[in-house]
Amino acid sequence: MDDIPRPAQSTHRTDLLGVHSLDNFSLAVPDLAQAQSFYRKFGLHVAEQGNGLGLYTEGHLHCWGTLSEGPGKKLRHLSFAVYPDDLPRFRRRLGQLGIERIDPPPGVDSDGLWFHDCDGLPVELKSAPKSSPDAKSQAAMATSPPGVRCAPLRDEAEEIRPRRLQHVLIFTRNLDRAIAFYGRVLGLRLSDQAGDVAFMHGVHGSDHHLLAFAVSNGPGFHHCSWDVASVDEVGLGAMQMADRGFPHGWGLGRHVLGSNYFHYVRDPWGSYSEYSAAMDYIPCGMDWTARQHKPENGFFLWGPQPPADFAVNREVG
Image 1 (cartoon, helix red, strand yellow):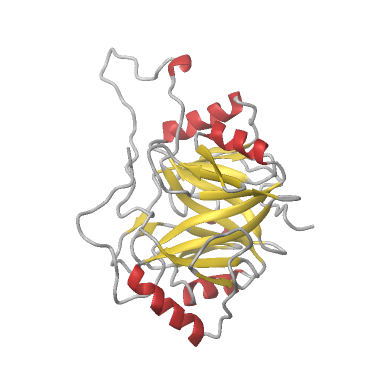
Image 2 (cartoon, rainbow, N blue to C red):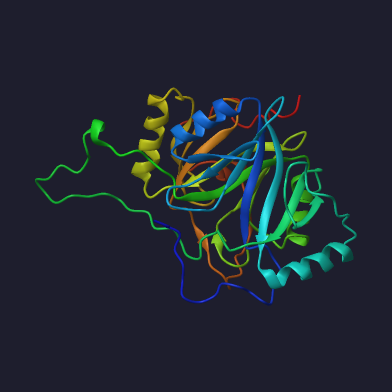
């Protein structure tokens, strides 16, 4: 079933022009068979799609990510969704800002608006249904009455299957420039910033961040984050991947900014996939006050120390 909460009323702020969802991300990887194995073990549905693969979640028809084969791991593009009546407004905005339109990348069938971001990454704006949540995702804490065992036997634990894509974090050469570009052009808003990391949300209701940035000496892909139903599922997901040959990562812990519980699993190319639960939510109509935080508040509230190379951008030399 579709676990993304939906309210009865619209969540379209007509007074503001902004994307409503991060529709999907596109990665090139050196081995599609290896990618298919990793993401299936992570709990996603992986389907052949053209000459590549599509990433789906249980009971949801939306394609959250596409994978193609290339000489190495590389973030190919990001695609953002807008309301149909906002697409002409975005077309005019691009013209007013003097942002040059480009053709879709080779092999991509699209009638959206394409352009480069401030780091040269291709970005698409397209008319599509809202895939970001319209309310805070529910996260449960399993309990039992006295005299009843709560935890299942380990060999009876169900496979963890994420419910949806929550966000991606990408690298940028200049954090302030990236915040300004994605705010001015796409209408995203800064949620919080701490040192060399920043988090941005959508104005039509979204998680604390649907897009995040970290500073590097070039663009790149750090991680994709996937929503699960509880902190227990975060931990079970970590064990699931360790049992399936992917023990390296970071967690279990809790972030400060966004408040979500996390565990990151290192993929075969040195980036990460994150199990995430109970992230803060910024509803449509709320003008969230962004704050500048100390660097230590941008990482984690509690948990183990991250790997020494956790923030390394492996797409640049």
